[in-house]
Length: 440
Image (cartoon, rainbow, N blue to C red; front, side, top):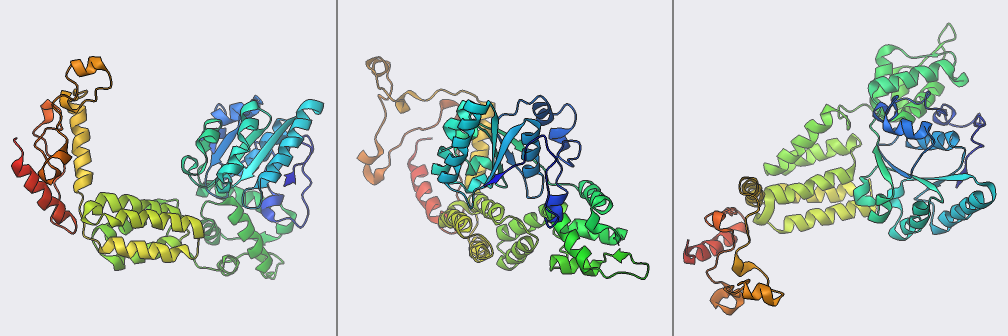
């Protein structure tokens, strides 16, 4: 737990603190990025400036300003600031903050802002502990997450919070932060970085301001003084600071979409070698392994379907395993699922079927349910003929009986046309037998 400084005072930063902490903005005017939320007239800026800050969830990538914004809000609103990290904190820590908040409200008439970093890592019990305090306004909760909050935050808590999406910092944003650091921080005086190496440093930062500044600080410490006493930060020092060479994969730019497309198309095209290569390319570039796992769940239904029904089971199990163990071991799970899906027989018959059904829903909206398919829970419905001519399939040979299940306007439709690939071949044969006996 971390208690923030008195909101009206300039924060005292330890000289030994990392560069990213020394340069952390303390006002909205100093903050770089997130113009869609913080430019004049934008929603979040209006809330902050009017001191009407509700409980919020910030969803965005690392280094995009989630923690900094929470601290600025606390200072602006004269609120006592507490920071918890969901990985290291439990219900006991939350309750201690809530007790302090009650004291603030009753005795000091003061506000309390609780910032929870990585809130998606709180379990259900931990999140439940926050519900009443958020609803009653005892605390203002600011949760930060890099994961989709609709998947990771319980629905009751999510419904009590506004969700704001923070975007990765652009090259221009990072360039401005870099210029500010070189011109204002005492420890960087006498350091210079040439334009090509400056761009290289920004590229390696991947839209993360914290990575940029910490990498800059390390590279600056590695730089040797030139003859004129100026230390030149070169590509060599930057690579040593990051301990890796650049990859052309940019997880937040065009290459992200190019590589994930190549990955999906390799699996769809039944090429496990190509799929494994693109998987490794994404992981090496820092892609979120859960994003990859989610895309494979989609592919298992869209491109494999009933040709191998187990594919979906494995893909979901793979996602859960990745979530449980994390990187670097998660790459083993991803590799297993990738090679299996790429090697499966393929069918998009289910995907095509539901697409055609949606098309018909738009063309023929609100078609009535046939009377024999309707339930009759009341005497009136029974008298009106609801369910009267329904035939129970299990009463007939082969558990099948001729009967219509579509609205009259669509009774000739065939949406699902299974292929002859994999397990779907048997489904096709079974349906053909039934279709032949139907009275069309």
